[in-house]
Length: 133
Image (cartoon, rainbow, N blue to C red):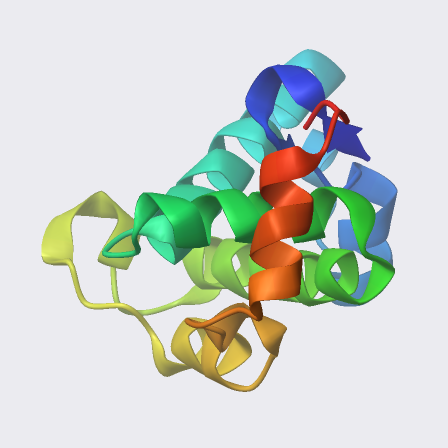
């Protein structure tokens, strides 16, 4: 579900459980903590995805993730890979090593999320949109 207050798509816990078997409530101890952890990790994944990108590129990507089903699916798949790496990777990339596991990089590079240049028509659509995202 796209969350306006966070300007990103936040997949739900049931989606993660169906894709990975990961039960956030069991991992975190209760539903409130589980929802908070999912939100926190999704925002970290989004921030990593947007790092080193121009503001215009981030705006277009955010718009497409909000309103385009293919982009939403690519983002959800990427977030799953990011969170799997957080819980299961031997490389402690989130907690300080800075080394991003290949599974995370591959989800970006093998999807729409690797786009760097967008057609003028999409940029204009984003600039002229009266939608909230």
